[in-house]
Image (cartoon, rainbow, N blue to C red):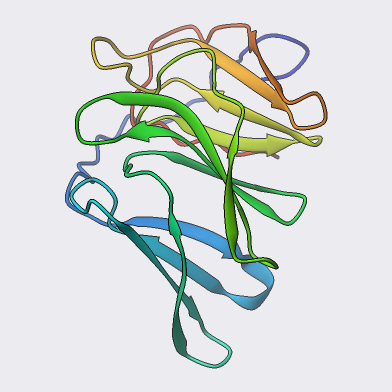
Length: 169
């Protein structure tokens, strides 16, 4: 996404079934730490943190609501868990983890329900693209400005994409 429009890149389409694997959140690339949550089946959402520096497994504050197949972004030292599936519905909610305080709080809801979406950070904004709303794959996209606390729609992609990855260059 650049200049308000999407561009196609060459590459083969690959379908990945990750319905049984735990959700993996990259917490801090500089310390090689990784958090995991087994979100769809547990009523309580324990999240564990593994750090390669001291090879320890810590339990961090529980994710407040059950979800899997969500997107994750790290911005301003906070971890944003975006959308997903709670076992019954695709959700538009956002939860924000503060690792310094070991606390979660609610973030602003997206405009659209999305699971298996792509999430990326670019220029201080969080982008949510594609996904599945429970009925169809989505081509729509939206962006969160954390300073205004509002999601707004942006140009749709040329085609629907579910189980999509997103990244910023």
